[in-house]
Amino acid sequence: MNNPISKLITTVLVCLIAAARAGAETTVFVNVNIVPMNTDEVVAQQSLVVIDGRIAQLGHVDAVPVPKGARVVDGTDRYLMPGLAEMHAHVTSTDPAQIDRLASLFVANGITTIRGMLGQARHLELRDKLASGEIFGPRLTTSGPSFSGRSVSGVADVVQKVHEQKAAGYDFIKIHPGLSLDEFQALATTANKIGMSFAGHVPAAAGVQVALQYRMTTIDHLDGYFAALLPPESPGSGGYGGFFDVLLADQIDIDRVAEIVAATKQAGTWNVPTEVLVEQLIDDTPVSELKSRPEMRYVSAATVKDWVAQKEAQRNDRDFSPETAARGIELRRRLIRELYRAGAGLLLGSDAPQTFNVPGFSTHRELQALVAAGLTPYAALRTGTVEVARFLGSNGGIVAVGKDADLVLLDANPLTDIRNSRRIHGVMLRGVWYPAAVLDEKLERYAVQDGR
Image (cartoon, rainbow, N blue to C red; front, side, top):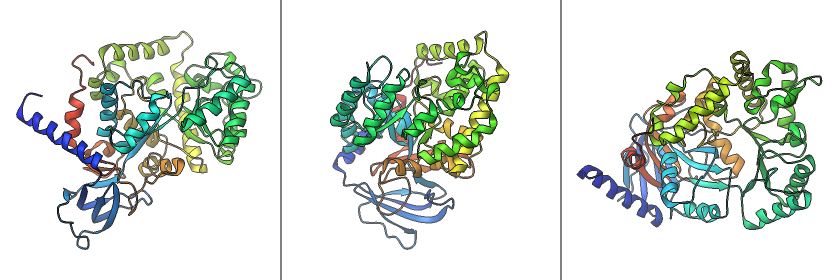
């Protein structure tokens, strides 16, 4: 940070953030390939004009003039697509330095929207400051403090807390394990009545079928699906289920998959599979490979050590079966594929930060997991763009005139190879352009020497 180039980049960054607050910058992407995401076709040789945070003009490079004084970004041989969303994220601290670290990890990876799955009162102010550009970072949708067997005590308490979170202005309710059937039903009934979304884990006392009956907004991690697919005579969760019951895979009744998928579609419930979280915890990837990933340089050695211990504990459990784990991964992938084919909503989310999931980086690994499950790169990318905008009712998700200018410029086509989603040339956040060099400099501030 003491060399002239670093100082220059830092100065540029300060100026860019100031421009974000002013909200009056005009930027033109010239001669760029557009990946609009409302179609799987790339539109070549386009110019796109952004004014005051929105896409103001889009057309062939020869037909769109460059406004005087505009910032020009050369898009030649590059691909411009909507910013991605991480729909199962955790804002683990409200300390300004930690917020900037988290924001830098997300934005440098093209993540322009996150859904915070474990909220607190200070997240409401943070949400507003992120939206206005006062604080650098992605747009935030936040839950309140979660409802669990430890945080609530009875039906009356649940009803009161649902009303309190609605009045406070939280975007949705997060459910953690432990609610009784009566408590879940009271939560769902009250939330549906007052127009409050509820999402997260499916209480074991309720099960997926009840969650769907009450139109749970999102089910995360495919939680409860394996238990719902057990035959009636199975001991189910009375045995060793492992992480999200994936080790019940050898007991699953495959013929019931179509039924539960159809019920999910009928209920209008969305799923956030967080597939990469599950797979990398139970698959046969060596911990030496996981802890040597490039993104681990942004994680402390102590955290990496904890993550390694979690995987080793899972794999070393006396009842763990590598064959059953592999079968569980295969079945989860089938569920994802069948949910997609049935038209049941899927949203992109990896659960970050969490075991081996470094914010931002893990979202791209989740995209690869979705493709491995059978989705095309286009379909996988839609779960983090078009479908997110539809779910949230936001003004983004596609590249079109009038849409919010949350954009990612890539050096290669992500529709031909999903790994190209990582090849980020720069990110536009609420109409402000951040070249990769600036974002990389921000990341370097949070690199740790002992992370691996």
